[in-house]
Length: 275
Image 1 (cartoon, rainbow, N blue to C red):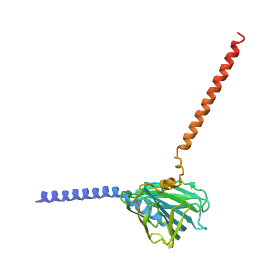
Image 2 (image 1 turned 90 degrees about the horizontal axis):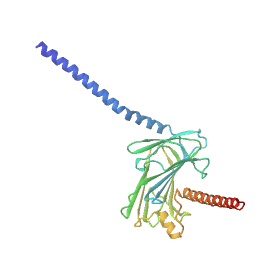
Image 3 (image 1 turned 135 degrees about the vertical axis):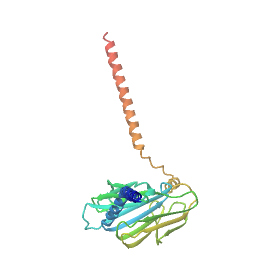
Image 4 (image 1 turned 60 degrees about the horizontal axis):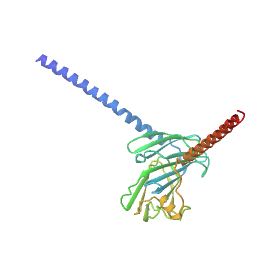
């Protein structure tokens, strides 16, 4: 009986060792997730408060997607440079623009940032040298059916003293509705209508969903329809300036070659006369 007892005790110790080993391996595997979570939350908690934030949504403006624009301003007495952490939907693939300006409405300057990709969000971290920042990104929008809807949720990463929302109505859209209700409506210089409202104070950590619904049967974007109706030529592509430069260089080289050939011919004729 004694050998059986000893064998059972050895097996128990072996099982305990294996259990501890498995727990250690599991802890090592989960360590990055636990480390990233609290750090991200801590960075959000350390965000400065914004004096104002304007959230703009332009559905189907120049792409079959929703263009979301965030225009923020720190308080006038904010310490600069200020470190900000901001989340955008993972479905966007990342920002198309992140910039700052020295004053409201001034020229935008590109701003470097770091990004962390997670399941639902892309976290952007950047240092703001001035009070004003500008973020743009495109979020997918289903355009297969005539009844279309899109929802952007402001995650509440920063507290805001004065929060405003502006939504652009797509060209040729009908039955347009926004939630929360945006009472003001006005025509913009581009010929499109804009719905807007001032929502006032908004505390950090409180999400704000903005849902847009409308009906649209035309597959073209607002930009395409405005260009067609006004007869304006399409805007040049990003690489058109480079193409023009290449053509100018080719023309200069051709002229230089012709001048060189003419000079050589005259020199050759001058040599043949004395001979």
